[in-house]
Image 1: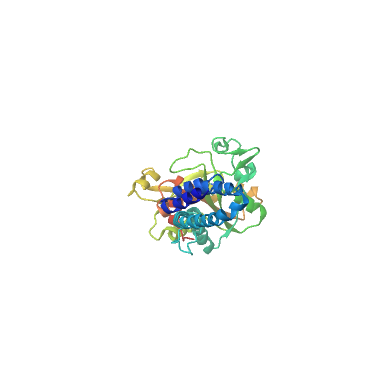
Image 2 (image 1 turned 60 degrees about the vertical axis):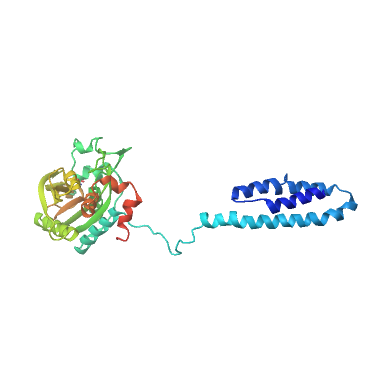
Length: 336
Ligand code: PHE
């Protein structure tokens, strides 16, 4: 027994521990339940009572020495490791991270602000629509190809709205003229996904109904809007077009230029980017909403917010807007 005590004392004087792993081995060999120190203590329990005095004290001292040794080594290899790896003491206390607005929301806010300054109010409608509000009330013929399965996502009897024009109908059915409102929201179309188009995107619908509203009002309103959003030198053009719910109808393009490869791809080499459809509200639509087309007239427009965002921030691929890559989104931090 005396020998065993001496041996264990020598271990403490000679053993070299240079890593957390070595310390772990040391604990296993000497201090675990089946370790050498435990074995010695077990053995001590069986010695004759007259020998207990002789060995009791040195064994207690030995045990203490092992505990001190262990704590010291743990300070070096375990707590030291904890400090350097688990805790970064250099992180500033005020390093809070806030989210930021998505570029589409930022653009939507800017667009709304401009129309608000021209007297337009904000309205919203549902994304799951019935046929009446999405098509029929908007003067789509029963056979119109836009109702085709290829363009529209159906949910049973209902559809995912293909445009925000459905909200025009809801608002006109609810109220009485005059109307001067903008209606932002998400819309869905069963389209092939590319750098220019996605199967869902965002629109802002505009509606102005009053006595004596004409096409010149439409052009001037949109012209003034574009100058405010993109700056006073922005070039636009109107092309005649067709929508069942407006007559006459037009398409408005913005000059994006041909200077960069993104601009050339986005505009299919023309330099012009189509950003909205517009026109004078068709008399049938007014009638469908119980508004007398002999008394009232008005214009409507529906613009793609995603395309406006791409133009405003030089984004070459619409899919970048929906990948949620934080490196992309971080560029818009601080904008409102
Ligand atoms: N709803 C049309 C579209 O999504 C745009 C539009 C709105 C055209 C209002 C005319 C008037 O393409």
